[in-house]
Image (cartoon, rainbow, N blue to C red; front, side):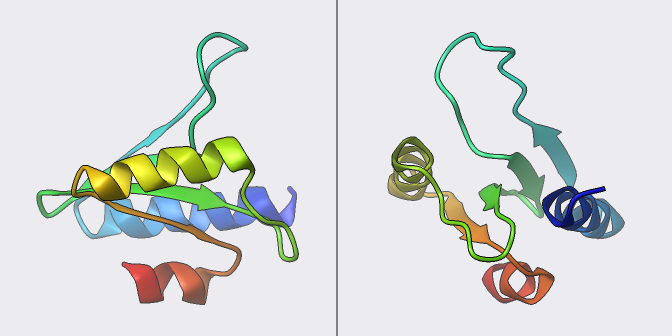
Length: 88
């Protein structure tokens, strides 16, 4: 399993352990691309892009993160579990 996939799994498991629900965006080539994880935890919406260390979100991913933030949700990207916990 790649480091990015391992981090996604760890994040999903952590959110679920806190009673949250997590959805993964799977477009299968249809529609616009989104971010890796969408979740709801304690009544709050999160959009999270997970990257392998050294990588950055694409322009399209940044548009989605900005749109979620503008709508009142929490949107961020992370490349380490500690980054995720800090944002959460």
